[in-house]
Length: 619
Image (tube, rainbow, N blue to C red; front, side, top):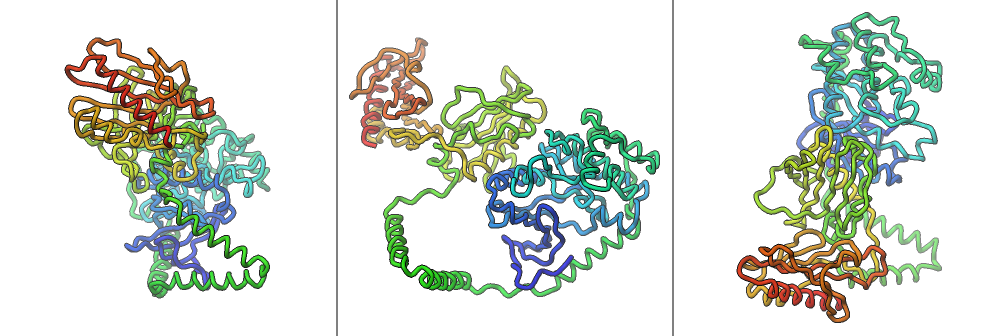
């Protein structure tokens, strides 16, 4: 633990920085304190990651999932900012040495300490794997020892660095050579069994002081991991029986965390689970923290001081620019004035990434990568999806349906968790294909429309898979999601509830119409016992059924229900103003309850369709 460098920033986010805890391949770790006094280990990632948007996206997704991990043997993630100039995350501070530091100070651990360590590691992996994460970098420096057991840190974060071409090269992998699995060393797809291999290597290291695959160089160590049997000759038999099954080359032959816990059975409680030198290190860590906490905090910034500094910097920058670029000064000032004037005349853009106008244009079938939801496996996207929705198919036969604007009615759904500031609701039900679970998040602006992830007939925890999908979806929506093509004449980005004017709706319904957005691309107007609906879907001419009529140059098709008890009537037409192959099918319907005949229903539906076509021609 070292003091901060002179002139170094003393605050990140809402955390006051106290000291430096160390540096590694992913970045550096700082000791911080939150406003309520809780201590955090704040990791600032390597500056080389900051310019990589792919890293930021992966980092955001992994952090959100890591927040779901709980349990006595992990250091919970408390906060993060993937959008900061240098992305960071804060987890609960653990006062104690790493496993490496402990073994360096005390030598190999005794049998009972290793059983204690194995129980804690298996319990931590149980929690990490429960939410669909794979640690990927379980090594001695990512295991901390405390008075009441081990803590696993940095779970799920190593994956965020994968694919960063500036910090890795072709054929390289993220991880620690002596503690990674053979499949990780070869760059293959990973399963939770990869972490169990690392656990076995950690137990060997704790008992002997070194990895069972240690070589004279990194290439030699990686070769040993993939091709040679581990060196277990120095292990006491009880520890060998724990470690050897974990170190099987074939992932299918390794035990799960639950099986390892069953084998270990009940571990006897110990007030001092580690050798005395390790507990002395823990006490030293606590004393050092106390000394840094006792130092007076930096003086508070005076109100307005930050703005004043910004104004001074802008002024100095302007002077320098004038001296260097004297010939272009008039142009630069006049352009800035012109842009500012134009910006003032433009309508304000909604900054909410989950607002109606942003969600309407998102391509739902490009929100998820094939491997972004570990609990679903590698997903594929069948054809015939519509605007704002997409169905992903799991290789195990499960389905994930994304709906960027689903309407909810009836009793409020139970709250399952939060994603950022948004409450998450849950709905479970059964279908012919099997059980289903839907997790829904409420955007701040849209009161009757939610973003949903619905998992059906999937092996494993379907609600956890839905939560994992929803976290990824929201994170990608807040980043820079792929957009649907914005064609000239498209009605896709318009508010469907403005398609029909209130006066016409009130006239058709013979009363005050109650307007409600049904989803991103449809709306209803209701009065007592009757409803007018309007919606936009993807399709072509083959989707138009029934007889046709001409409405101001638009071919409109009338379709009547075949059910004698159902007097609903639809009018549909194509938006031919777009030059896209992805045609927009517009649908208006009138739905009565009571004594209204089919002809009257169709007359009301056609009247609404005429008004909507007239309104569209004005846009």
